[in-house]
Amino acid sequence: MSTSTETISQLESVSGRVIWPNDVEYDKARASFYGGIDRRPAVIVRVADANDVARVVSLARESGTEFVVRSGGHGVAGYNSPDGGIVLDLADMRALDIDAERRTAWAETGLTAAEFATAADVHGLATGFGDTGSVGLGGLTLGGGVGYLVRKHGLTIDDLLAADVVTADGQLMRVDAESHPDLFWAIRGGGGNFGVATRFQFRLHPVGTIVGGMMMLPATPDVIHSFIALAEAAPEELSTIANVMPAPPMPFVPAEHHGKLVIFAMLCYAGAVEAGERAMAPFRALATPIVDMVKPSRYPDMYPPDDPDYHPIATGRTLFIDSVDRSVAETIVEHLNATNAPMRVAQLRVAQLRVLGGAMARVPVDATAFAHRRSRIMVNVAALYERPDQAPRVRALGHRLRRCAKAGRQRRLRQLPRR
Image (cartoon, rainbow, N blue to C red; front, side, top):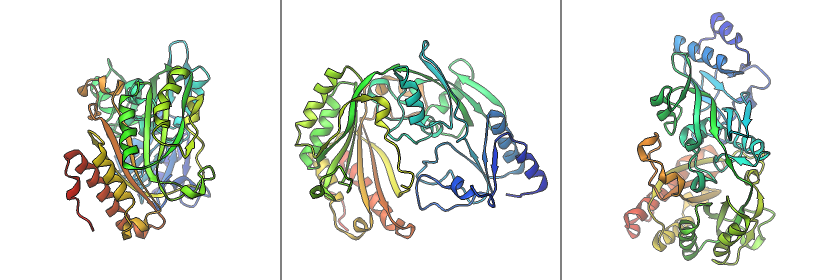
């Protein structure tokens, strides 16, 4: 990026903060949630409002400068922090206006899921977001939003009523089902390819006391298969995430289970407490829980605070499959328990299984740009490691696990190469 006098002058005219490489806060401002990403943008612009966004977009267009948009900084690929160019950072745009009577809210896209959930819970209301409280609303919503209310209330985009978007020519547009309907269709699942979303209007749902939290179970093939079967058969009020992984050495995990394969499950029942307790009983009966923190609580409690010093280096892949039968579960266990070199390099390897369906599946496939309405199970295979130079070996592990999940869908599990 050319830092000419004219360019500097245009950037300094924004109402928000302009952070240059020689500023004290530069290193903190350029850091992503994930570690191992050490890129140096030419300038970071913490925009204050939509007018700032339009100025930065126009400058990037006129000068031909690369620029990226950041909301919460959780992109695992690090696209939110380029070498050179402009980072348009929405983190200071956090205004939230809740209309409890109409059950709607206007939220700026620098807000996080936890901030929105906490504010809405004061009114006994909620919108479903993802599974991590510090994720920004901007990127999460534009991608679809699969979270703890997905079976009861659908994807985040299913509660998106309108959006303010700055397009590539610097225009600010209000888009909804009646105004610019094609653009409204595209931003619901099409990602950030159509403009910079500065504000969203969401529908809110009555969500009082939930039954939810973390439950840890031993990860045998039978337990994994049965867990997914129970999650599919459960009432739509229950959404689950099953992380098959080695038990982390957390204080609440008994030492004898550290490093052993477990299901680190997150469960959320958004309905009557008594019904929620009944829905949890079959999961508790699968095996004696190693840890059971599932209890009546408030929806924001599903988003515990992040450790500010936790910045894992990670690689991962996401895909959709139709079922997890016992043979698929066996293969997941075999691969996660493998002792080959890539496995030893990885500090943590995870196969995350999310049962979908319910309200998400009832929306017509062509109603939004999200293409996976009829998918039954979403799988994310991921590995965390210590040093950037270990990335190629750990990525190979991720590819193997991804092939494993695909093979499960194709029923060719035993033909996987052993290397």
